[in-house]
Length: 257
Length: 299
Image (cartoon, rainbow over all chains, first blue to last red):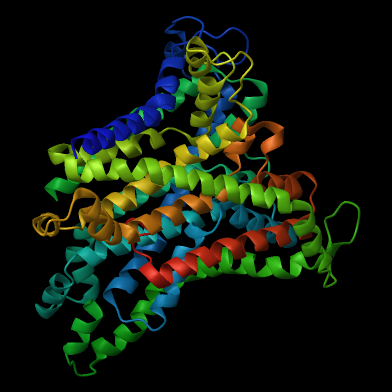
C-alpha cells in the first residue's frame, strides 16, 4: 500500500513535470537572444524582446485578425448557443435528443473532416474565402461548446425561480430579464471565454477556410519555415498570463455567485 | 427531470401555454439553422462531391459521375497512412490513460484542499497557443536539446534522435490528450462517495480488489469519455506529425491537407474525409448509446 501510494504520487509529479516542460521553454525563450532567424536554441539572456514585444509587424497583424475573429465568433456562438440551451433545458421540445446530438457532433467530429466539408462547400458555391468564411467556421464549432456549457449551467439551476416570478405576474420576457439572465450571466461569460480561447487557438479549420487572411496560428505555422522571432514566445507568455488571470477571476466570481 | 416535473403541473391550455408551444422552436431556430447550414449541409454535400470527376485541369468544376473509384483509390493508396494514424492515436491514448488515471486518482483522493488547484494546473499549460507548444517541443527534443544532452550524459549512444521520429509524434499527441483524459476521469472519481470505499475496505477488500471491483467500474464512464475525447483529435491531428514527425511520419490529416489545399483533388479529399468520419462517428455513437453525452462535454 505504502509503495503503491508512493508510486502513484511519483507518476503524478512526473506528469506535472511533463505538462509544464514546454511551458517553461516558452517563458524562458522569451528572454533569449537568438542567433539567426530561429529562436529555437538558447544563446544568452536579454530583456530586448519584452521591451519590444510588437517589433514583428506581420505577427501583430495576425494577432489583430485573430482577436477580431475570436470576438465575433464567440459573440455569435454565445447568443445562438444560449438560446438553444434555454429551449433545451427549460421547454418541452419534440426531437430534443436529435437536436442535442446535432449540437454534440461538431465537437466529436475530426476537425480535418469539418474543415474539408466547409472548404468543399465554399468552393462549390463560389463563396470567396477570407474573414467571412473563417467567421462561419469558427462560430460553428464555438456554438457547440457554448451551447453545451450553457445547457449544463441551466440544468444545475432551479427552474422554479422563473416559474415563481411568472406566478407573481411577471410576463415571460420580464421573468427572463430579471431572473434568468442575472443567474446565467457567469455561465454566459464562461461560454464566451471558452469560445474565445478555442477560436484564438484554432489551426486546422482555419487553414482550410482562411483564403488569404492570416490568423495567429496560421502565421506561426508559416513562421516555422521562415523565421521564429522571440516575440512569438513573448506573446505566448502574455496569452498564458492573461488566461490564468481570467481563470482566477472566474473561479472567484463563481464562488461568490 | 424538469420535463417530468412540468408535466405534473396539469395546466389548462391558456394563451400562455399555447404560446409556449412555439416559443422553444423560436429559441432553437437560429442555432439550428446555423448547424444545418454549416455542419449538416457541408457534410451531406461531401457525398456527391466524393463521387464526382474533376472536369478541367484546373480542378475547379466538378461533375457528378458516380465515380466509386475515388473511394477505392484513396483507400488503396492511403491505407498505410490511415493505419499509421490509428496506431499513433491508439498508442497516444493508451499512454495518456496510463499517465492520467494515476494523476486523476491522486487529485481526487490525495488532493485535499489543493484539489481545485491541482486540477487547474492540468489545464493551465493549454492556455498557451497550440503551435507555440509544438515549437517548444522541437526545442526540447532537438538534437542538441536538453533532453538528448542529458540522456547522452548517462550513456545514450551518439546519433540517437528524437525529433522527426514516431516517438516524438506519439509523445506530442499524448501530451495534448492529457487534459481531455484527466478531466473526465477526475469528474467520475469525484462522484464516488468515500463511504463506499470505506465499506469495501471494511469488507476486507485489499487495495487492488477495491480498485478493480469498485473504483474502476464506477469511473468507467469518465474513462470512456476520456478515450473518445483523446482518440478523435489525435487520429485527425495535423500539427504533431508536421512539426515533430518530419516527412516519414505523415498522418491522415496531413494527407487531407495536401489533397485539398495543394493538389486540389476535392473528390478524393471528400472520399477520404467520409471514410475518416465513418470510423470516428461509429466510436462516438457507441459511446453516447452506452454512457450518454454529458461526460463528453465535461459537464
